[in-house]
Amino acid sequence: MKKGLKPALWIALGIALGFPIFSMTYYTMVRTSTPEFCASCHEIQAAYDGWRTSTHVNNPQGFVADCMDCHLPAPQDTVDFFYTKTLHGMKDVAAHLAGKPYIREEQAEKARLSIKNDQCLKCHRNIEYMPYKRGAMLAHRQVLHPRKGYEKRCVECHSNLVHVDREYYDYKDNGGI
Image (cartoon, rainbow, N blue to C red):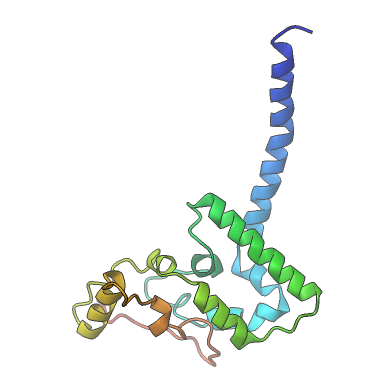
């Protein structure tokens, strides 16, 4: 066998195997990253319903923050994103198959503890400028620029925005601001 042929065959084999594996992984990640997929698990249905009626879906800007936006690291941090997504998925499937009871309040508290300010700030970037809401503007400054020992998390004040049982859609108009 010629000297350069063996490495070329290994490269060709790597591409032939790598491309379908990467494609299947990517397809799986995309398909399992929708709110509808999350809601396909009956334990999560109430959380999904609460999300659908919240301002994270119904707002004057037309933005939608889905499950991944709050519950997973930013996709730009690829390794942490895939690791966390896979870990969450395996944990949820294992709990479902084991018949572990889903206690919504307990799961909500775990979720609140895991949500970091950076996850909120992916969408809520301009929270220091609120000309008609001085108290909120000052509170947000304390979160964004905390003094040592006084760190706060967004969910300490905003814990019941999304996964709350509502009989109506919670739509907030910003009054043209």
